[in-house]
Length: 320
Ligand SMILES: Cc1ncc(COP(=O)(O)O)c(C=O)c1O
Image (cartoon, rainbow, N blue to C red; front, side):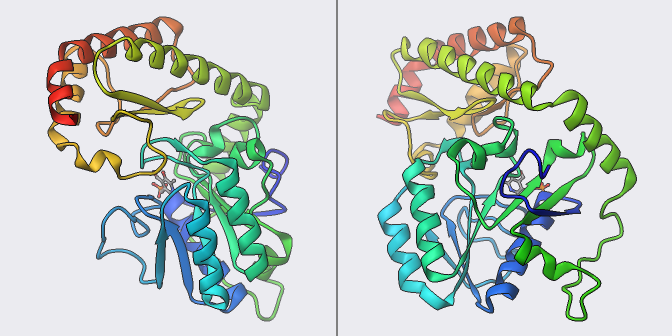
C-alpha cells in the first residue's frame, strides 16, 4: 500500500472504512489539539460519519459542512475556523453521494487552506483508491496528511486502514511512553492481510488498476452517449469503474440535486432493470467488478437504454 499510495509514509490496519475514518479524525484532533471537523454536505464516511441530513448516531464532533466543489466557500470557511479546525475530511470523488468527481482546483484549495491554518487534510479513499494504481491522490497529485481505506483492499474480507505522514502516525508507536492506543482484536488479522496482499500483488496489480480505470472510463462514455440519444434529462457522472446516473438537465457538481426527484423514480428504474436481469445500487450507482465481461457491459447498457426510453415520459414529467 505504501508503494502504491504516495501519501502513505506509515499505515495501520483496522476492520472497516468507518473505523479507519474514526481513527483518522481522532488522530487529527489529538495531533492538532483542536476540536472541529469540516466535511462535505451529502458525504458518507461510515455508519457514524454520515452527512446526508442529520444522523442522531453520528460521532458528536463539532462539525461544519461545505458544498462539494465550491472552492471559494470552502477556503473561506477553513480560514474563518482557523485554530478551531482539526481536520477536513473529504472524498476526492464523492462516492455514495453520486459519483461526483472533485475539480482539481477544489482539492488544491483544500490542501493550501489547511496547510495555512494547520488543520489536517484527510482523504477518504475507502472507495476511490481503486481508481488508478495510486488512487485519486495519485491521479490529482495531491498529498493529504492522512488517508483512509477499506473495501476491496482486504481481498474480499473485512478491512480498513489509515495512514499518512510519518510525523503523525508515529504517535501510535507503542514503544513511546505517550503513545496513542490503537487496539482492536482483529487488527492485522492474518486472514485479511494475506488475502489483501495476494489481491494487490497478484490480482489488482498497478497495471490491472490502470487498465480497469480506462475500461470504466470507456464504458461510462459509451453509456453517456447512449443515454444522450434519449429524450429525457439523465446525466452520467463518475470516474473509472465507479459511475452513477442522475435525473437532471446538467451533471451535478455536488450531492443533493437529486433530492428534489421523488425517490419512487429511482425505485421504478431499479425494478425495471431487475426485471431485465440487471443489478446496480438503487440510488443510481454502478460499480464495475473486475470479472465483468464486455458482453455483460453491453447487455447492461442495452437494458438501461431501453428502460430509460420506455420511462422517458415519466422522467420528463417528474424532472420538468
Ligand atoms: C467513502 C466511504 N467511506 C467510508 C465507508 C465506510 O466503510 P465500511 O462500510 O467498511 O465501514 C464507506 C462505505 O461505503 C464509503 O463509501
